[in-house]
Image (cartoon, rainbow, N blue to C red; front, top):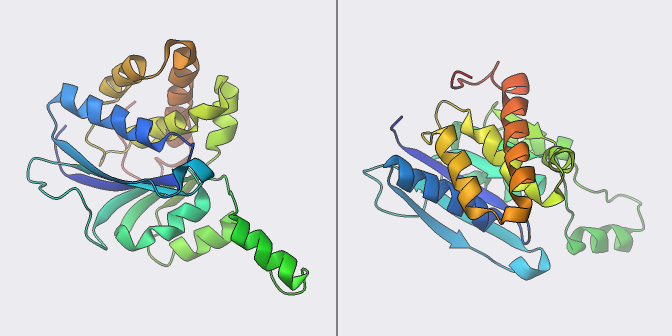
Length: 216
């Protein structure tokens, strides 16, 4: 499958976003697709914001996605999805983990208010705001599926499997599996492959009634 595809990969430090990007890039190389990325690590060692611009297509020259033109946001943390929403085009896809990791500034605000008016921003709030941009907002329990697969750190591979079935995503699923096998450490390989399959299953069960998907 060929075509252009631009996505923001985002989350917080320690969630494996760079590995996720590297797997996609390796799969593109083996499939003859041109892919370029631009990374911003932030305070990644302190669970700070991490984002990666991923662009696939022969005519792509810049690694950075212009505002309002991204086809998707693929997010390992729900709040981070909102942080980068300006890159998403109208009608694009926001595929995110349902997990919320509140920054310390949120806790400070609520403690300072003594709970009188302030409240944590939750996933429902995130989805409500995202739907001002696109109706294609889909949350998946990536952590729960990673735990089911046997490795809590395989959240990134769950989302990788989930996005792989979208018709707009031009990378072949088998190429992605091969890249998972190549790039994940041997001791974590089996769990990550299972996480990848669970992500695929979640997409077919929950999202593909609303989005065009590849045939199983």
